Image (cartoon, rainbow, N blue to C red; front, side, top):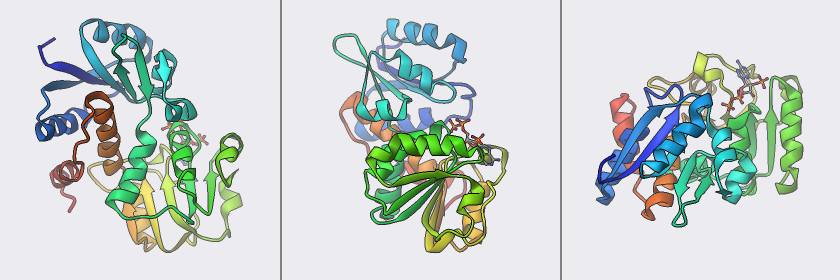
Length: 279
Ligand code: ATR
């Protein structure tokens, strides 16, 4: 390793990760001397790879698919939001040599929605599509913003119902099937947390599900609008956004945890959007 503080993102696949570029831009902007690399790590090699990284002087790690649950189990201590999401995307070496596990995904989404796009969650009717790990990480932060109501819908409804039951202590949340949401009062905000966009598929949504002036947000992102972002645009969404802003915001929160300095995110989002030809 170099004499710079070393950070990395572990995951598989990881080749196309934008995290090294994002953290390089944060470091330049805040004049921090650090190195951030992307390392392909399979689940079965996770523990060994983390041990090697920190024994060689690493200071902090991001963990992405399929490693977030493993990182949660590996951390010595966890923040409350990591505990709630049962997943860790950020490991930070502490002064006593222990590893703190955090999950910055949920606050990254909230920062992008409210800070970058001026979308208020308070009093809103919100629908989350999907009931996997990505959904779990955003439920508590959303309920923390006092929506009028939160519905979680899933192809396998039992998973949505179980998630809603688990989080019901935090607010008004219900789980259901796609058939159950047909004909319901339309939603102000629909968030796609399924993995459907990764294969350019679309969850089965009725045409009248989005309220007038409603917003669509896909946690996934790509160099072209995802199928769900296209659906939102075709259904007259006031905004139909993908998760690139959330990616940068969760990275900024991790950077803050590691370096105690909060980088500006808007210029970094602008660079990444320009590179993919988005205005
Ligand atoms: P992640 O950690 O990214 O959330 P996951 O835990 O595998 O990944 O969850 C994927 C989610 O996307 C699930 O809610 C899945 O629905 P099922 O639980 O019924 O499998 C949902 N999903 C994936 N492809 C989908 C599709 N084409 N249409 C609707 N939902 C889909």
